Image (cartoon, rainbow, N blue to C red; front, side, top):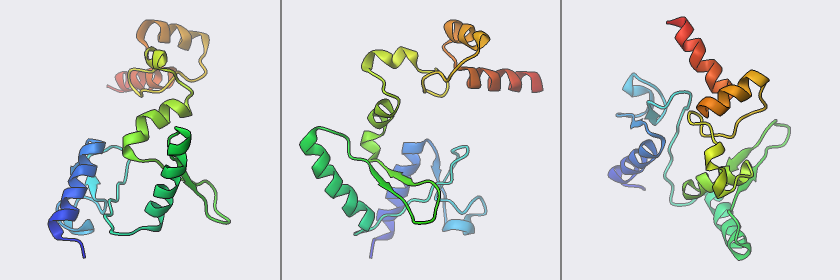
Length: 151
C-alpha cells in the first residue's frame, strides 16, 4: 500500500507539471471536481501512483528498444471495436515528442505560434499576413479577436 503522503506528493507533481493545483480531499468530496488536478482549462486530470502497472511495464520495455535505436519511446494502445487510441509518452520526452510529431527542427522554434506553441495551420491569405505580423496562427488569432468582439 502506498503511504498517503507519497500519493499526495505525486498528485502535487502532476498538478505542477500541468500548471494546476492538486484537488484537496478525495475526488468528488472536494466539491470542486472529481479530477485530481484542477485549474487546467479543458483537461480532466486523474493521477494514479502504482507500484506495478502493465502499462508502465510496456513503456519500460519499449524504452529499452527505443534507446538502442536512439529514439523516443512511444506506446500506443488501442482497444478492439473502439475508435482512436491512447498515446503514452514520458513527461520528460513530451516536448521532443511534439517536435518529432510536427517534424520540427531546432531552427523551427520561430515558426511556432506564440499562443498555442504549434506550427501554423493551413492559412488563408489574411491568415498568412496575420502570421507574418504577429506570429499567431489563424485559429488563435480568430479566437483572440472573437473574445475582444464579445467584450
